[in-house]
Image (cartoon, rainbow, N blue to C red; front, side, top):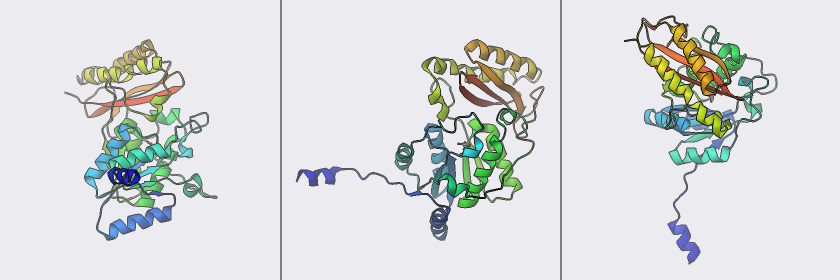
Length: 297
Ligand code: PAF
C-alpha cells in the first residue's frame, strides 16, 4: 500500500537517451528528419553550467529537436594544459540536460571520434593567427577538427556556440562556410554571474581569493569598451591601461588585451567599425578569457 502510494505520487523523471556511436546518432537524426523535424546541435565538453543551458534553450526555441554533445576533446588541449584534470561528470550533466528537456546526449569515446589511423586535421588560417592562437598552439586545429566531425556526424540545421569563446565562434563560422557544411552557426550571448564574471567550466579551479579578483576582468573590459566608443581614443593607450589594471587587481599574467574587428579579428588602432575587446589573463594556474562588443558612436 505504502509502495503503491509512493509510486503513484512520484513524478516521472525526465529521461535523456545517451548515444555513444556515430551510427546510433545518425539513426536518431534520420528518424527525426523522416518526421519532418529540424535539429539543433549544442557541442560541449561537459561540466555544464547555465551558459551551456542557455545554448540548449536557444536551440530548443529554434529547432524541433536538440542534440547536446559531450566530448572532452583531447586534440584541443596542449601539453601541460588541463586535459586530465578537466571536470567530468556525465551523470550530473545528464540530469541537467534531462531537466531542460534536451532530446539526446551524444557522448562518444575517444576511439569513436579518433579511430586508429585518424590522420585529418582542419585548420582555419588567419582568424587563428592572433589572440588565443599563439598562446595555445594546435588548440584551434583541435576545435575545428572535432566540430567539423560533430557537424558532419549529426548534420543539424543549426549549431550553437557561446560568444564567450568569441574567436572559436568565428573560426567555426568560417570552417562551416569554407567547407560548405549546410548549417547555421549561431552565437549566443555570454551568461555571467551576478557580479559580471563570465560563466566558465574553469571558474571552479579558482580559489576564493582568485574568484574575488576575477571580477576585475569583465569590469576592466567594460570600461575599455565604453571609452573606445569614442573613435578619437587610441586603442593602444586603453589596452595598456587595462593590462596595468588587471595586474593591480591580482592577475598574475596577461596573454593579451586587444581590440579587434568584430568579423575579421584584425587588430584596430581606433574603433571606427564594429569591434570587440578581448582578453586572456591568468589568476595563478587558471587562464580566464572574456570579451565584449565595442560600438563606435
Ligand atoms: O567550447 C567548447 O566547449 C569546445 O571547444 C567545443 C566547441 C565543444 C569543441 O570541443
